[in-house]
Image 1 (cartoon, rainbow, N blue to C red):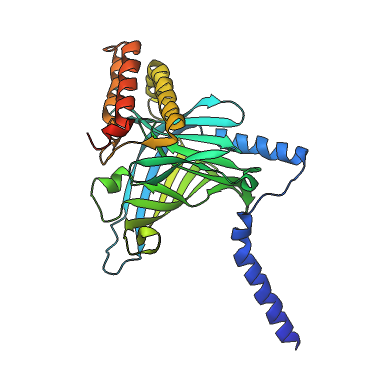
Image 2 (image 1 turned 90 degrees about the horizontal axis):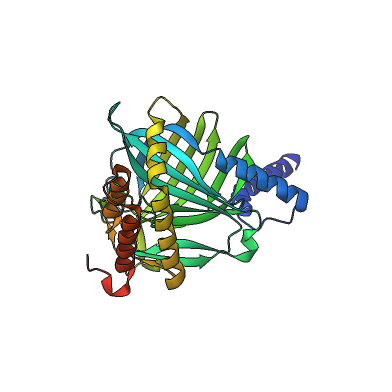
Length: 335
């Protein structure tokens, strides 16, 4: 009998441990003002700690096929040098801009990379809902307390995906995990025109002794009118982006680019925000190589601004015209 009771206790404990991650996604109970303030300040320190100069390793691996006959792609590893700068900090909102520095020594040039916006207890997020479409989604009020949203933007500052989660300490590791989020295909997949057209993924950020990691668990989905929800899973993918602190490259190139273009990009961010608020979201045609159909030109304008071949007023005016035309309902599919 004693052995039976011991077995039962062990089984119940194991069940509780398995269920723990789901419970962690429930509402955060009121912890009192002092504790909430301490958590908030530590969250801010963690997010701000992602700024700096890094050697980056991008590791992408398709793993388990969910569709019979599908052959997972070979593992792909790439890397580079990336500078991450804090470009806005209001207290409850922190914006980190990533800048890739590429090219041989003495011939470096900068590619404006992705952007991540962190917002504390937001009321809504700008979520990807399907091809060419991002919509405002209300964050459930009972889930806001103590949580941060992360919105990721593409190289032209148009939206990519958004999610929300809580910064936690677990097994001695500081980590943030998103809810399930829908995302458009990354360039690495989009240029191949695969059978799947989006990811359903969980996003994680964790600090390390030498920097931080961005870890994605993606299910690649394909349209199927006969399937529940209109989608079928094709294959699982794991992405591990590792940021190790490193200043052995021309970090000044990143800062010089940003100094020359920051006002232009601030205006571009405001334009996208205005469209999203006015239209309840953003609809714009996606393009495999660049993300959106106007991304290439918006980036080129930034380069021309740094080179001094276009005036800032003219650069902003052209960007406004591009964004206005590309997001106008009558223009969808016109590019």
